[in-house]
Image (cartoon, rainbow, N blue to C red; front, side):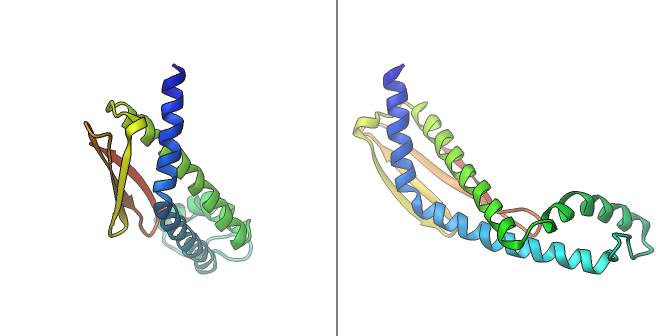
Length: 161
């Protein structure tokens, strides 16, 4: 049991070090997205709501959609300063990065790779990253799929083969 925990800790630390470029790139994307998201919320508030939070349009379907958004996401975002919102999004991104490194380490260990003989080689393919891990006998390939969009904060997942 102790050697399993030790191997997990060693692998997690090696992955964290090897994937620093991914972390930097990911945090930059989240920071950019949070600024755009905040501005979009401000624009929606100005365009669709009066100062007393009453809706300014005659389209009932859009009214209900925006009321739901305003009382949920928009009002909570705009209750913060932009710097606070960005810092909050970056903190969530840091936690996601750490969590995914831990999960990745466990998935790699399940492949039966010997951590004491481990070597890694990492490369970027566009915004995605690919890491080949080998102990001389077994090879494990881990790569990311990054998703982002107008309403979706940048996020990624690891695939392991």
